[in-house]
Image (cartoon, rainbow over all chains, first blue to last red; front, side, top):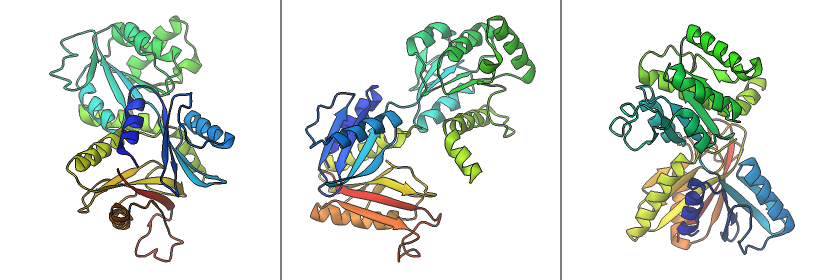
Length: 238
Length: 110
């Protein structure tokens, strides 16, 4: 294999352009397909092209049988994203651990004393107001959003944007009491029970977490459990 | 849903570094899994010609055998498709304790 091809696939995905690397298992010959248009010159049968398209849509790498032998289709999709609202202590370990788990992380806090590069070395920071940041970042179904400030002025606009998006995970830090007050405000803003059900609050799996790092573990664990809900369900059914 | 690609970048970087140093390198990729298996399709391991490796294709169960095949691929340049699982004769030597099955594609990096 040519390392250059794999590098281009990884870079393409990181830049937001899905890619597929197609390998003929017998010969080892490879072809890189970027985006929806197939520029590659692999000997493509209709059925192989259909399988590549399907793998890209499903975000699932797969080994398929063709009349010419086995072909491995490896999908490189843009990374999952995590938007953390509130550059508070919990956000520091959460941003680091989520990056290790493969998320592209953005920490949002209009208070620049909190969202500083000293506190978040190497982390993408935004000092926009959350509604502006969300309008720019456009969370999609591969995005998770967590609010951590406890401050309705900052958290609420982020939650409103999150609930209007198809984000796969929405979490909000705060006690049961804080959360009840939050839901009341969201109800006044026109949101319904079905919206409330999408918010994980109080945030995180209940593992008895105490320190900011432990709370970050509980949040990342809950994001993971939500991301992998299908696996979890099939395991519990078995 | 998604494959988390966080680890692949690091493996790629190390493979490129080894190539830059003039070393032979092979790349192993999990291409299919059945039942309970520790790594997902797409999981990778890179090995250099001295047997140093980064990444993983299982929970540590079959890495030894994959590295051996990687070293052979560096020598002869031929790609290989390896089967591991409990149905294998060698289940107790090289197998997956979890009872799953995996196929690993091993290729020389050019």
